[in-house]
Length: 155
Image 1 (cartoon, rainbow, N blue to C red):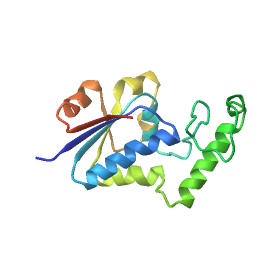
Image 2: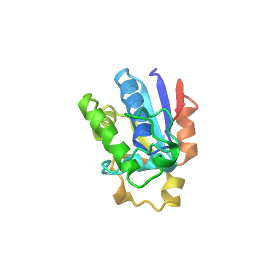
Image 3: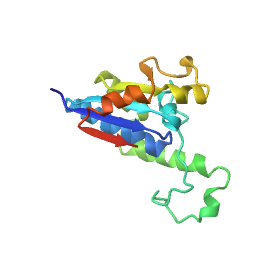
C-alpha cells in the first residue's frame, strides 16, 4: 500500500508557492500518492501562466535583503516589483527550478491537483484561467484523501 501525502496550498506568493510544489514532487518521486488542495490565494498557482507570481517584502521580516529596509519603506510603490525581481534572479542564478517546471514535474509524477470549488466560485475564476490538469472539489473531497494520508501539511 502506497504512502500518502496531503498538502493544502493556501497562499499564492512566490515564497509560498515553492514549498507545496517541492514537497509534492519530492514525495511523488519517493512513491507517495500525493494530492494538493489549492484553496484561497493558493488557487492562483493553478493559473496557466505563473509569470505574475509576486513576492512582497512587507510583513516578511525573515526575507534577506541586501541592506536593512525600514518597514514603512517596504510599502512604497515599486518595492514588491523589486523584491520579486531580486528573488527570481536569485532563483535563476542558483539553478533552482521555476514554478512552471516544478508544477510540471508534479503533474508528470501523477500528483493530483484539487481546485477548491468554493474558492473558484468566491473569486470568480473561470475554467479557462487554470491549467487543464486540475480536478474541482470541495473540502470533503480533499478530506477523504487527507484522512487516510500518512503526512498532511498546511502551507
